[in-house]
Length: 280
Image 1: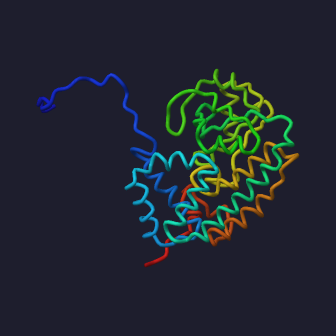
Image 2: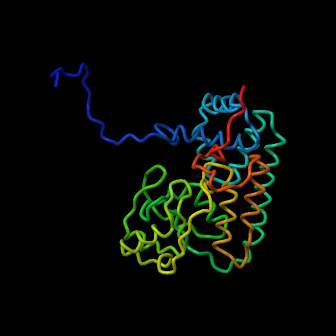
Image 3: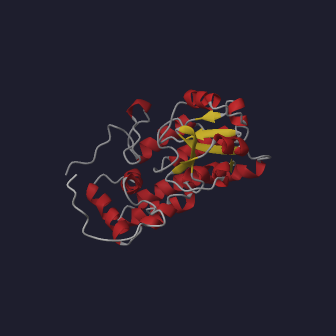
């Protein structure tokens, strides 16, 4: 409206600029929260220690490596041990790492008994929002004895991308999991599938699942509970984890609180809406 021209000249970009992993907007703050999630789970209750690990990660240009390490169960557990060393809480970090490795070992011991792995699709909120194949959720599917069809989808997006229902028909998943972070009730998800005419095995057999609690499949060490849940769903003849008992133990040992669903929020870091930092 002021009619003033810009005081520089240039050419229009020919390619679309894409920010890197954990760069720009909410991905950056989520990265910091995921670090916080690990530290809270190993008993850190002093925010200064959290800031120390944030600084170590950011000053060493470690966001890209952090993004990579968070996407795989083994490298994630390596982060737990590394952060524990940085804040001089190696023993508590080792307790958490050992618990997670113990459960993974139980699941691994059952894998040879699987005759046929089901095809599994992981969605975020809506049926056609496909979580990227490289993300942790899909690694959990495969660790629990499933085949991640998300890895067959090509495209760019953070944390995933919209796909057509035609693509979903081709993928034909036998089981569908809904992200525990941006979720929706399984009944509503099923209705969305029916309205779209999505005639795949998972819909026909109503094999659509949400996790028992938020953030059980990404961002927080609580994914170990989600892994046990996925294993129970995919292979109930092999795995029979008592999720209530495991969750009760996990929240008491690593958060010092009871497992109480009404108190939970969708924060990666804070395990409960009643959890507070220690007053200085």
